[in-house]
Image (tube, rainbow, N blue to C red):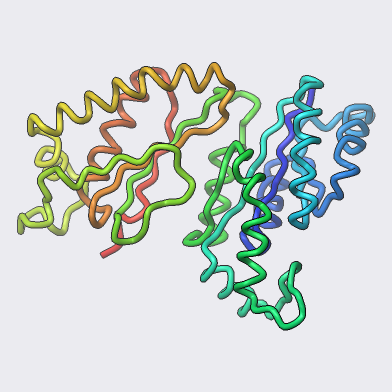
Length: 285
């Protein structure tokens, strides 16, 4: 049976770019596919002389994306591995992208602002986002960063664990990430920012790690989180969830959150998982 990835999401959020990146990885890509043809394309790919085992299907306008949910369920019932990748981005960034490209929003109505068109599309796509297996927020990503993320997630998907784990650190002052499942706030831990010799270092440095993690409070917190994940991860995997992201936040995203995220990723690795670790704000001031 086929490994099928349905790419949905907001216009301008990177659907076509994600499709290009997948094509570079050897996936068979069909862009702007009418929903009525999804089942037919899968059928043809399986009956071809050289069957395509990995299909990326990019669905277009919002109404078609909602219709695609039923097609996904049919394909899953037929025994295929089917996932929905939802591409998201903040409205101000989408407005900037449309302004730079001079393109008209596909859902634009005469006299309507671009912002209103984006928000109307966002509202229509809420059921699709809710049904998605993975959400990628491209607000702060360059095309190169997006490609790196796509490569890490899909380059060898046939041999990967069913549940792919990501651990992320971030700074609250730069905004809470949109595409995460769990958020842990570690702003209660001692802050290295107020120690002169630690301020310019990050949670990747041993001195900062020791300062953050060696208190009894930090040890208890990390142990409690590990226990929670030990309970929940097998249940999510049994349920068939494909992706799960754990985010750890502190004020600036440079010290405490980085140290704790690294500690959790080490524990996950020892527990037999292969977490992908990112530090979103570690180099921001």
